[in-house]
Length: 292
Image (cartoon, rainbow, N blue to C red; front, side, top):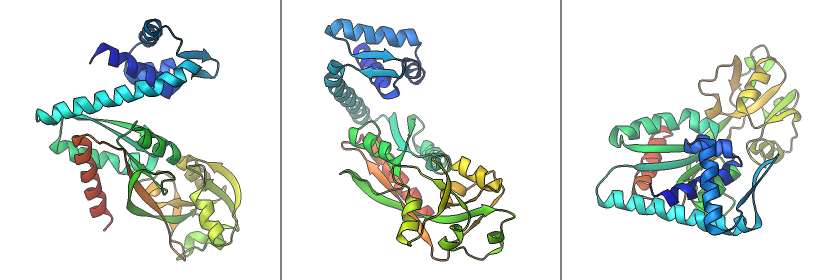
């Protein structure tokens, strides 16, 4: 890799990770090596780019103006390398995917394993985030494609991939564990464990549409924490079926009287490399066949 591009990528990782140490882990350099690359850029340009504080690393005013241009150069270099590989007939490259935890756990391993049979030399980067972060990464080109369980809130190339049924989750010894189906009103009668994976909770929206308000006693973005709370009898919850696949907890999941679903969308950045386009098509085909 061109040494200058290496330094540019190191700078972007420092900015994106908010830490020299985390950037060093991602780039697989020593922390002193990362610091030296940033210092080289600052010395070469005669400007201070970042400042360190107890809260981490932040851009200077000059850095705020320069880093978007650096990001653009790095993206153009990636596009160039992908095009060279395409022209030379090389089935290589790196596909960057933004996704949330249940997709990373239950979908991506199988899809990547199947794709690797045909393209063994392709590398992958999984970036985990909430829905707003993933949408922003896709728009900015930091990932090639993103998967979110919400309609995109800004203009971005997208399409609906699948529906994920919402299920009532109760402790094994709960009276509702014996019911055929559970109503939203039933879930309002117990302490409620609320999963909030983005700024607005999709679960809260389901209750609000029904004119109901659950008795929320615990809020978190961590689905495993919710399941652990329910297992110990602290309350009930409403969770997507994707999260409940192969879960290690002893709890009961029930269909709702009036089924509710969340929609999972695929977001695609502009100007995909040929290999990323091939992977995107493959992913769509796999998920379409899975949810027929």
